[in-house]
Image (cartoon, rainbow, N blue to C red; front, side):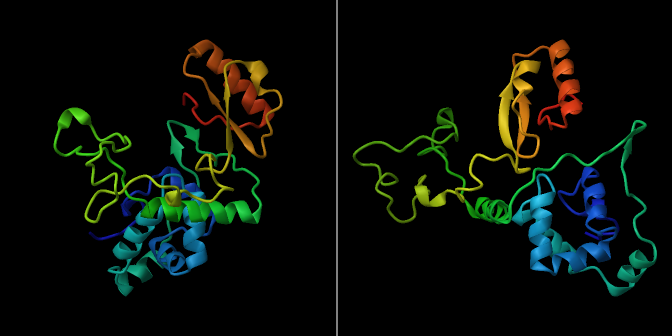
Length: 225
């Protein structure tokens, strides 16, 4: 696959272009240079929503085949996208939490651990389709998976957990708070917390909550638009 623009990279969306521009990445050449720095690669994982270690590794593999001629072309003609316009609406970067250095490191470590964590599937999910793949603790006195014998599927253990500081945080770094009306927005710290509107809330009330949250500078994780 020939990578000519940033959007040709697998997993990179148009919504990410504005965030990349803030980091000084406007071309394929800039991205290749950024991925060569381990600290910048971690910053990409923390900043871009839906981008993990596996996606960054794919980008490195794709950009290794980019020739020097194509690199010069991209440096002379950088990407023109600074903001993304969709239906006459200008994309604005979403609110980010104010995190200390320890929490930011924990978020980056959690992303790396999540990329290495195996997929836990129910015992004999491959044998009986009616069981499904959803995790269930293995049972039975003869269960070899329960006894953790070799060449058996992995079992959920405490060692697979991520850092304590990043636990239960949204991928953006916010603490989630469930709200059902405008009054629930009181006491929300916009620097550390973001709100998620309950599924039982109707459209009319959701609009009122979103408008009030925007006035208070609070990020809504599940906006309608």
